[in-house]
Image (cartoon, rainbow, N blue to C red; front, side, top):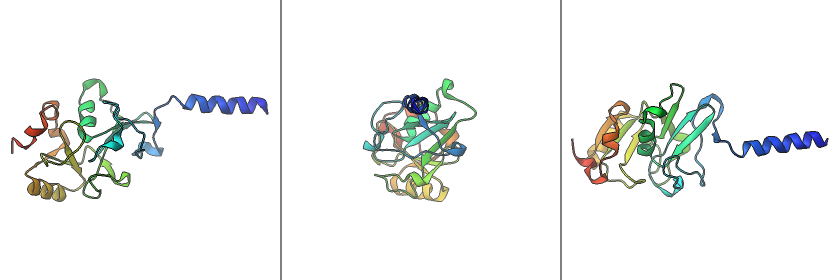
Length: 167
């Protein structure tokens, strides 16, 4: 009985120092109020707009914005073939409180740059599952639609006010 209890406690303590475990199938993981951004360490829930996460090797790295996640991902040392990238579909979420039920594959999402919407620090990239919704948001806000492969570090490092240029 004592050995079983010691083993159980040992397993619980070992689990305390692990990254957030991903769900079965390496799918998206829900965000929690105390989650901190993998890049900046800020509390993710304190920012409006879509969030991002990278799920790999049974763990999730969470980010306070799509731009933070993509900036991290674009660093060559962070590219892993087995990684899955997810962002919120803002066509089905409220801007201030994105719904984790609507996390989508970041590689197939449509991004709108230059919306003027508030988000985490730096460039704000609104993410959408549907092209038509992204195009409407871009038309309504003066932004422009980008695909995953069009986003690079230079775009992510521009000042927020410059996000409207280059239509």
